[in-house]
Amino acid sequence: MIKQIRLQPLVNLQSRVILGYEALYAKITDEDYPSAVEILKTVCEKAQIQHDTDLYINMAKQDASSSEFADKFLEVMHMLNVKGSRIVLEISERTKPQALQQVKKTALQLKKYGVRFALDDFGMHYSTYHYLSELPIDIIKLDQHFVGKAVKNTKDCEILRSAISLAHRLGCKVVIEGIEKLGNLATALIEGADIGQGYLFAYENEVKHEISKPFVSLQDWLIGVIPPQSAAYYRE
Image 1 (spheres, rainbow, N blue to C red):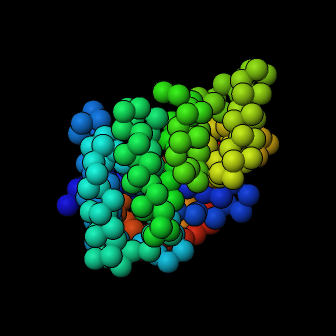
Image 2 (image 1 turned 90 degrees about the vertical axis):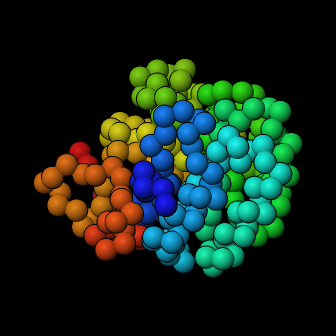
């Protein structure tokens, strides 16, 4: 079991309903990151995914280059009776271009079972548009620097607006990561982002006078301190 996993909520920016969680791992380097197969196994064995809650999992460096990854992932999905439609696998732009064709084969195989794919770190690393044209992406995740700069700079605001518009024209949902301030949230809403993720979000059943926890531990989820599906409020 991987003990360092924490679950961070992804929130519908319009309805404020928690749509799902990203399983985050306290890594030191990319080489330390465990396979998505092991993360799926850990989360589902300790906290069964609700039928209406998505689970976002990062594909590790070794997953991207493995021709066996899709079969192993499907095996665990079937073993734990997890619907593919509840899984979003995140592909980082840090993935080496040499692995792109293998990632594409993996994605096409898993999408047959309903698994969706998100392009993480959009615009931060390699050829963004090449990844978008080559891979069957459903969700684009924009790094917090897009929103952080857009709050202060008109040019950066136009870049953010263009990125969101492009994603929507390609039929993709847009997640804004790292929302930590109300200004970030306001910009994300004004520019039409779909989903938010970050320290600003907390839960209805937390004590609002205390500092809100940005992550939900597996233990909290298990004992029901934080329900998997609830409305979120924003901590000011």
